[in-house]
Amino acid sequence: MSFRCLRSLLLLVCVGLALVQNARAVPMQRKEPKVVSTLHSVYRLSLQGNETGTETIDRVAYDDNTIHFSVVNKLASNQGVGMDQEIALVVEEESYFPRTLDVVKTITQGTGSFQHTIKLEMVSNVAVLETAIGTAASTKRIVVPAGIAVQEMGVLVYWYQILFWYDRDAAGRQRFQWFEPVNGTIGSGEIFVSGKETITVMGRKTPVTVFTVEREKLGSATLKVDAKGRIVAGEQNATAFELVKQTEK
Image (cartoon, rainbow, N blue to C red; front, side, top):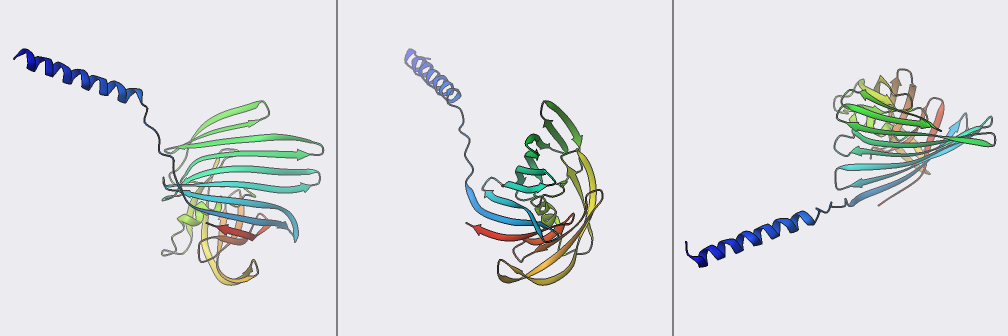
């Protein structure tokens, strides 16, 4: 090999090494997901005709196969006790399987208050659950069935997972399994279509499908769902809810 060829080869090697070093020095920038659609919904909660609170749900779909639900659930004081919840739930758009859940509950009693925080991360079929009340904190790893739904009494947003999984072509009673994050318990239930009717939603006559849900330990519920698959009214654990405002982009 001539001296000129050898010098050219060494030059190419040096240039290659420099390019590799530069590539290592510049970290890969993660592409930020873009918003595909948003839906803002406000529900009125009532007990025996008396308003007891509201639940506001912001649903944001992204182009990375995720849907983010941001929820504010406010329950008015009952005999000196009230509770506000801030909930952040992320599910996979194609399956509605939960990825993460963050909850901050603020409980007021008289003139005092305290917070209860919940963090849930689903790793395959393992639920990593962190809870804290004041200085008392705990972490659990719980094996859960595949395709499990988050459920908790008094919260409306979690019903969208179960409705998504309901197969209208198969119809009939369909079983599902749920995970309750406050205590880390697992249970099951059944959902079925119990009828169709027309009700008034935000001043308009709206045809709805009525779903009945039966859950062990957590009780029953009735969900009234419009043609777009949106919950517009219903009842769970004696608390009625109705859609009073909705905007979308």
